[in-house]
Length: 92
Image (cartoon, rainbow, N blue to C red; front, side, top):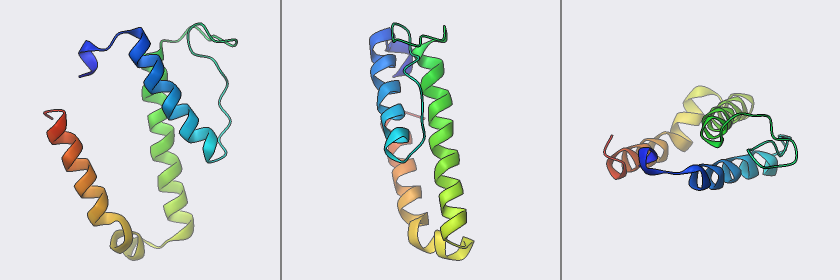
């Protein structure tokens, strides 16, 4: 999958992750290659960093709003299902 993506695909995916973070209140500048605040880092690297931010945001929100047993009961089965489906889809 990712080995076949070009700069345009990486930028599209990175923007989607950034949009998700902005939707939950995390400010991120328009700093992808070619954007007004271009920081000189590739769209692929932004994608990875911003996905890590999504993961950290989700873990923080779970920890703030749910204790561990409740979080597992509410989200554990679905989380594992989505993760496994994604791994199968991408041959991981």
